[in-house]
Amino acid sequence: MKLSNKMTFRFIIYFLAFYGILFIGTAIMFGVFIFQMMKGFYYHDIRVLERSEMEWAVIHDEKGISPSDALLDIAERSGGIVQILDPDGTVLASSKDGILPDSYGINELKTLAEQKGIRTWTLEDGHILLFEEYTETDVLLAELERKPHFPDLTETDLQMLERKGAVFELFSETGELLNSTSTSGSKPLQATDLLKSNSSVNERKELLSSTPVQGGNIAVIRMDNPYYQALDSLDKQLLISFSKWFVLYHLILLFVTLGFSLWIGRRFGKPVFYFLRWMERLSKKDYKRPEDRKIRRQKDDRLKRKYRIYEDVDLSLTRLASNLKENERTINRTEKLREDWITGLSHDLKTPLSSIYGYAIMLESNHQWSSEEVRGFAKTMMEKAGYMDALINDLTYTYQLKNDGVQLELKNMELHEYISRYVERRDWQNPIVIEGEKKGHVLIDPSRFERVLDNLIGNASKHNPPETTIHLQLATQQEWMELVIRDEGSGIPPEVIDHLFNRYYRGTNTTTDESGTGLGLTIAKQLIEAHGGEVQVFSSSKGTEIVIRLPLQKMQQM
Image 1 (tube, rainbow, N blue to C red):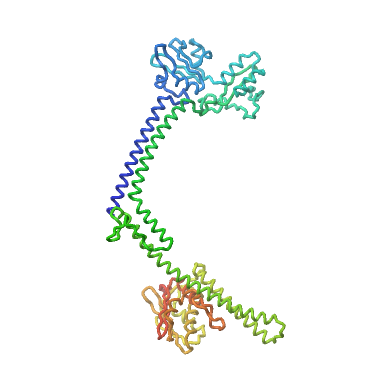
Image 2 (image 1 turned 135 degrees about the horizontal axis):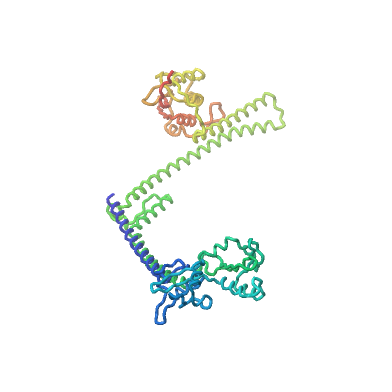
């Protein structure tokens, strides 16, 4: 036990160290990832950034102030334009030129502040960073609005929309679709889709811009969103960088794991393979223990000290080999008994069938049989058929008893009184004497226990001369009620006693009325055990005793 505890402690230390390496490596990997994410401005929506993050995204040099490439990139992926304004409202830099104004007055700034999709940051130096959502659909809609025939579209307009992969739709103020350029059967626009246009660009499956036109109608431009959960070049660079660190970390982890596994395998796995070889031998019915001097000491055949943790396994396999060897001998004996049983059963079925078949041939012949002869044939055929029916019924009954298929109706009865009434009802050829204890109650099924007595007393009567006395002796033994069926005959040979209660141990002679089915004693033993009892046989040259023990019960209260 001490060695086992020490080995357990070693395993804990080894795996804690391995876990520590794994934890530190993982922490470093995620630290690098977070640093690269911050450095690489890893966001999809510019509107979630804080002022401190925007300070990193602005470049100050001798030329003045300008947005960094990362800021331009995220503004593009966020579906808008970013501008840098001085405190007077003059635009110093813009991610896209010629779309938004170059300067803003107070009224224009007030209008911007009321619009949705606008986000501003005030930098430490007083400059204003302005982001205004302006997607590809906004560009297309603005270009169409400049046409004098809008919202009517020309062939040139339709070709432009087709090149951009955009759809133009015109709705009435009640939401009725008046015109659409869609030819792919796409899902029509719903009113709630207009609300989705206020969400982050990368969260929308399609870009959508709308404007009211004359008559209260609404013109809508929509197209697939190229930025919907997409990875652009900056994301790919960050992903590549992260992947390199990830692969390097796991390569190191792989080599550490392989080294640790090889050491564990050589240290603790060698006995496992030894025991597996042993079990493989057992599966092939080779019960001899394999020899391996790398595992066992030669002087005393014990496991070496570093493998003593497996002593319990070694002992268990030794016992298993012994048990398997003994079980194989038992199986061989049982198989021989089964073959004898089948041989006897086949003989006893074939003999009456031969008689029935013979008499049937005789009756079928052209010979004129007398009435007495026909009745004699019929009587013999009935007797043989009756024997076969009894044999099959008894065989079925034994299997029902074996598989708990017989329900007993137990009653608390005084055994002496029950046996006395039983003997009075039977007409045995041998004298029956009831002796011993007259008081003692047991739980029995009266009708089924009669079969026990029929088989056991009948067996004693059948194998002894008519003048042989059969004694039925009752006695109480602690928690048992004991019934001894004793005769004064010549006894039973020892080799027969060993198999007396086996199912169909011997073949019977079906040419006599006394033969029975050969299953009576087996059924008697199974019924006794079903009552919670047990049965034993003792025999010598002075006679045979069959001892039945049943659980003793308290007397019923009157």
